[in-house]
Structure formats: structure tokens, C-alpha cells
Length: 324
Image (cartoon, helix red, strand yellow):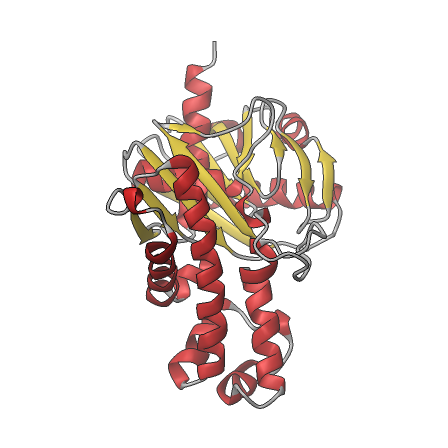
């Protein structure tokens, strides 16, 4: 075996690790649920243990690892592989790269999870080889990313494109960073689930109440999609309103970056691609400046859960091979 390339995605409520060969053929994978606010030390151990499971599933050994790429939510110091803040995990100032390099004795590269999802779609999926690809991935929060001329768009020190924290509604509900009225506070899956739970409690979403009750932890993306398919109009309206807010965020991104492709991804979009993408695109069409119309497309991601892990493995390999 010439070696394996590992991609890890720590976004949302899942931890996914996939082992690839040099041609990015899947050799093995492992998945665990993340445990919010379990602490960074326990979280890093969980990542390392899941890496070992994926390596074992690939019938390989830890010494076969060539490089590890990890996508983590929140602002990061990229050159240090340092998690500055991941509000939905409860992490601050975590030396992720150093801890995992010490454990595996192999190069580890850390980037924002949505950046790597967009990189995966640019390299292998819906935005393949376009000049500028922007991504919006709604989940527990709302992540954003951009690949510009083959490179992840970033600040000098830290990751950027924190589109979930774009202010949309002054004095609106709080997001995970305690900022009012942000895109994340208005349109994340967590927000949608909370509003859907209230609709179920009021008797406005009978199919949802029968399927999942009123506990937001049980109202997942697939459950929301099934509720709408079964006829819960109140839930459909909640999702549409969230998608319209996503559209407002996309308008801002188009005016700033003039992308060729806007990719919408994540489990929520995967469960309801037409409803969310079409609704957001309609909002964008109504609000974007006329000179930008016809210069971009808004599409659903093609790679599903594998966007982040494929992007992580490919980006980490590219970084490693270009190091002096």
C-alpha cells in the first residue's frame, strides 16, 4: 500500500473520518456522534479514536497514514491548526493540530469545516474547477466558505467567511455566539427545529408531532422533510422563511465576491434541496443588483456528507506536497 490520506469532518452533530487512496477512492470510514460541550480534551481523543477506526476499516495501520486533514467549525488560526472558538462545541483556544500530530506522528492540517466542504465541491463536485465557488452550509449553525482560483479564501492568520454571523434582523434572536439577529439565529437547522417544535406543540404540525414529538433534539432534517411531504404546511412555511433569510445572506456574498457558483449543502439542504435552493434563489433574484444577474448559479451540493471529508483529504495532501 502506497499510503492512505485521511479526511475528518467535525461539523454539525457528527464526526466522520474517511480513508482514501492516492486516487481518492474510499478505503474505509468511521462515524460517531459529536457530544456538544464535552470538553476539548475528550473531543480530541474522540477524533483520534475515530481516525484509528477508519484506518482499521481500511485494513491499514497508523503508520500507513500519509497526511490528515480535519475540518472544524468556527474561526481557526490556520497556520497553527489552532481552534480559536467553536461556539457550538464549546471550545476555545484548542491546539488541535499539535495534539493530533503528537498522537499519530504524521502531518495534520486543520481548516474550517465548511471551507473544506466547498473545497471538496470545487475539486470533485458541483463547483468543479470554477474560478470562484462560494458555499453556504446550514446546520447547527450556518457555515460559509469560498474557493477562489483554487485556493481557500482566508485571512492572514485566521479563517473567515463566517456567513452565519451576518446581521440580518436588529434585536432578533440570539445565535450560538450570543449575537442578536444573525443569519444563523434566523435560519439554522436548530432555529427551524425550534420553530417546528412550537408548531407541533400548538397542533399546527400534526404529522411532525406524531413522528417526532416536540423535542427539538428529535427533529432532524429528514424528519422535517417527511413532515412537509405528509402535509404539514406550517413546517413548510418555517423552512421557506429560513431559506429566504439564507437568500439574503447569499445576496451579500454575491455583491462581495461575484462567484460563478453558489453551492448550498449540508444535511438540511440534502433533505430538501428543491425547497431550500429554489426558495433562496428566488429571493436572490429579487434582491441582487441587476448587473449581477446571469453571472452566477445557485446549486445544491453533489457530494453530500463526503464533501467535507473529501475536501479535507485533498486539501491536506495539496498543502503537504507544496510545503518547502
